[in-house]
Amino acid sequence: MERAREGRYLVTSALPYANGALHVGQIVGAYLPADIFVRYLRMRGEDVLYICGTDEHGVPITLTAEREGKSPRQVVDYWYAHMKETFSRFRISFDNFSRTSTPLHAKNTQDFYRKLKSGGYISQAASRQMYSPTEGRFLPDRYVEGTCPVCGYREARGDQCDNCGSWYEAYELIEPHSKITGGPVEVRETTHLYFELPKFSQRLREWVESQEHWRESVKNFILSMIEGGLERRPITRDISWGVPVPEPGFEDKRFYVWFDAPIGYVSSTQEWAERVGEPDRWREYWQEPDTKLIHFIGKDNTVFHTTMWPAMLMGASEGGPEEWVLPYDVPANEFMNLEVVVDGERRAVQMSTSRNLAVWLHEALDRFPADPLRFYLASTLPETGDVNFSWHDFQERVNSDLIGTLGNYVNRTLSFTERYFGGELKRPPKMPPEALEALEDFRRIEARYEERMLARRPREAFAELLALGRRANRFFDAEAPWRTRKEDPERARTTLYACCVLLGSIAYHAAPYVPDAIERLEGFFTGPVERALDLELPERYRSSGAEPLFRRIEDEEVAEAEARLLEALGA
Image (cartoon, rainbow, N blue to C red; front, side):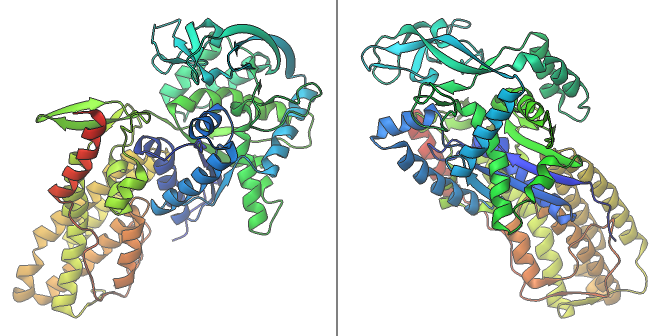
């Protein structure tokens, strides 16, 4: 049964800084939910493109380079390769994974700048910046630390407080000092370019108010910020690493990373179009009005994706001939903390990359396959509030839900089919009422699954996947084919045929979450992997050489993984 397409989708995940390994907090915020959503759209036959890449400019890169005695290029080259490999191992299915240090991206950034300047949205002004007499240079915001002027947090960055989220200028910090040397800093005057964000206030307000499908937390936060008054934002920095500024007198400056980073989505799409041999096709996704542009991000990136970036697209659309699409949705997820067991008690702690207090994805993949990690993280996606990662909960969810509910059903159905019916089940002349009732229940659950997935809430859809598994197991248990195979073999055969119908639906809905397992399943299960809503009952199902799709997580494995966190915690 052919379904009507929802339209054209361009899906992105926030560009990760190429200065360190990926941890599970990043994964649940921007990458796994996007990948699940994209895989679901592909199964529906939708026109969807999934774009990402590394963010390779800005102060975090230069800080890492100085700390390690390397060049910025050496840092980003290493971490680009590391991240690309880690994403691949975790089965994140980007259509293109680019980087913002390419010549193509530099050209795009400069073109955006010229377009915004021609529209009157760029200004130039002197500003007060922090200068290190010891180092003999202006210090970018993140080279400066001090006490937050709002909440008193003593390790506040020079542009934003990680404790209370407040924005401010670096010179507003109390007792500011250089993050590199610890030495004093002073205020000096320098000249920078600014993006005139306030000129877009009315358009942004009207646009955000019209987004009825946005998450309320995102929409309300941005509207309150607009009502509080937007400020012009600097788009250049006194730094040597980044996209050069095509403006006389600014040869020693570079574009501020927030300005060039979102343009990386465009660059990555263009790179994809070149790679597939259709260099102009990127315009379909960025300049055709029926495109749904969806940015999956962590909540700390909300402001950039819902004010500055849309305003840049609005400004770049003026004067023709190209009009850029605006974000259709910006699913901003909350944060993930860690939960560890200390002296028999569970304790929630914040991740700290500087203390190595995090669950690094590449290390987790060294211990466990991608599927169980994807399954557990999908069950904890922070769609509505902060969540905790726990190795003990990981073990419980995998062994109970993934293996006990879903894997067990697949194993029982296929092992009975092979053992008692030669691995082949023909379509019965008539489906019994019990099977038709189970199918109707499946259709209702599937409809809820689809509704939640299309609303970009894969954690809620995940709950419906488990509901499918529980309903299928109830049908299997109630029909008891282990008993009827002796008393009424044809009834047992019909039961297992119906179980295969349900299995195909479960596999279809599980595929975005555990893709490796479903690929293996299709190696020994022959029959449609399809929604019960669409299915025309096939002539037969076959199974040959079926084997368990998942393995149990053992206590020793969890203890070893937990021990690394406890060591970092100092417990």
